[in-house]
Length: 313
Length: 312
Image (cartoon, rainbow over the protein chains, first blue to last red):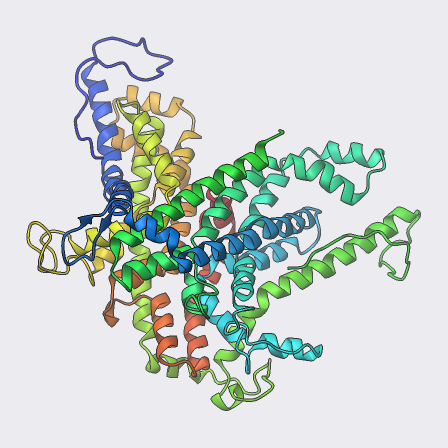
């Protein structure tokens, strides 16, 4: 990844609008190009060593059996065959998809409604914005600790709150039927802020006169929302969708704290299986193969998201 | 999680303050506003309550915590819980470690990232496009697609931690500051952000400076960088926040207590002692408060950063 050669001699500088494309370079220009490389080099070495090489290595290690202590052994597609047959990984994949569905499109819609509400020029709107965004800036682990306590069946806030309305409490995180929903609730609660924020920024670019024209035509608030706001925000929606999918697919911290993947794998995720394979079972090859699967899922979802939000614009 | 529908109902029970309405519309509008406020207030409270509950729990006595049904407001405020929590687990040490690492990451990002961003934005050199495209590709790489080899690189780092030149025999960078600070010190995202900021500046400055014979490094440092101070604040704050909140990487590369960061410290404490909720919530408050304060104080920069990068 690290190319250190200093370009010397005549070169076709890429699309250079001002200068003529070919000529002998003055010492000043050669110096300029050398400084360009010098300034980019430390970053390039870092990204090369800690991102580019690892990505390539992940794909390669996916074809091996490797436990760190003895050299990797090439086993072709065996890891992938095992993944396909592994009910736990299948469960993890399904959980990840469910988690993503509820914390991405559903949360996006809620975030959009909040953003529109916060775009009405209300008093206190800055305070609301801060409140909605606060969970996003705090650490997921710390926040998950608080939720662990909120979900506590005996002393937790949630059951106490429900008790006020006569609703029976649940063993949220210990109940296989409720655990995934509990994790989804935390994910949605934490992730709404960023989605809202991007929508607020995008809303500021929507032309006011569209709404005025619609009002003249007698369109209702709801109608205006679906006929103007939603279509005008398509590019923002695409952006939010992609980054949210990437984040949701990598959910890990709250699983680690809240449920450890349980009960009975009810909340295990693809990332959690990667973690288990690599750092509990020391199956580095298997973990790499699983993360390759994760990668392709992510790629696929991003492309689907792109289609869904870009189709008819 | 409040779903708001600003409904327009003919009911007329909300009497707005202010001048008497002349037509029907302003009444409906004011009523909508009130409804909107109520809905937003409910949503905002949902967001804030866990933080309040965290702080309230951290000052309750064990006896109060054991009560059923649980109390919301503390009956007595035991601020001494914080001092006791620091004795129960070295949260102070964890806090310090997190602070050192977050500062290290921020400094590396600001120096190396801004330099690269500048070069990519403002200097024409051969291979620039390839470097930039590589960077964009790296932006999309999820953490989990690199975490295993990153761990292996740390473990087999040659000539460290008893390793020979081939990286065999020792523990490499595991359980060292190197592993905590270097790999997470720079992200493709920050370089990308810096490039965008430098690109937004006018070109005349560099041309004039180059004609005056100023070295490229001085143009970067003395002419362009002072112009992007808000951007530096943005990237710096985001880096600090992300680093402070990071959990997985420090969990993987450290096992010793004196290198433990606060997020890992919380998780370990909870696993060892899952009944002392007042101490755990005190520790959680310590882990949370710096970011909340930083965010409230520098909201403008955070928001700019989050909306342009969308990172978390």
